[in-house]
Length: 184
Image 1 (spheres, helix red, strand yellow):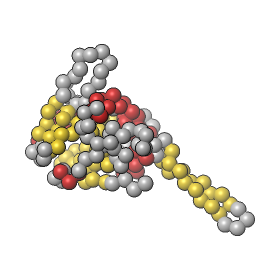
Image 2 (tube, rainbow, N blue to C red):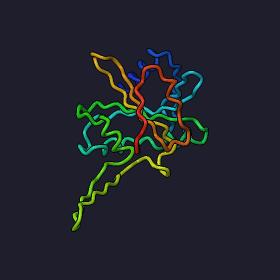
Image 3 (cartoon, rainbow, N blue to C red):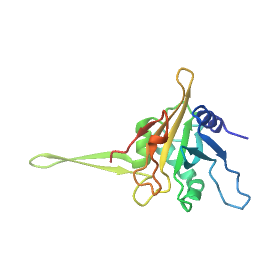
């Protein structure tokens, strides 16, 4: 049975004329496969659809970080085939866990600042903590997308590029999607 987020994703793709192919679940013990192949202007993209149903942590990016981890097996399925991937997330928790600051914190870590006071001037140093995407991590995920369905504006998808992706996507193929490039 399809989840609400899978139904919304299918509706989004159909409205834009994207060809959608559902991937059958594996019969092999422990093998996970993603949900769909999407064909857009001759480009084949693997998509895993996840929904957030309840609040696990109010901290920026923590709940989404767990969602990214839960999609690991499904999206790695494509890496051997050199197929770009998108993890599509939809928030049903009513806690606004997929706002831009949450996305960036999950992908690239939350920013922490230290202010040190010396005899002359204060020094400020910042680092990114708990990041999921880096040169060594999650390179098999090409992008993270947020799917929203609102009565007033309809279905919208916002895509956040992974600058470390081994299989990047030319995002100009999408017709009406907001695409954010990471500023690190």
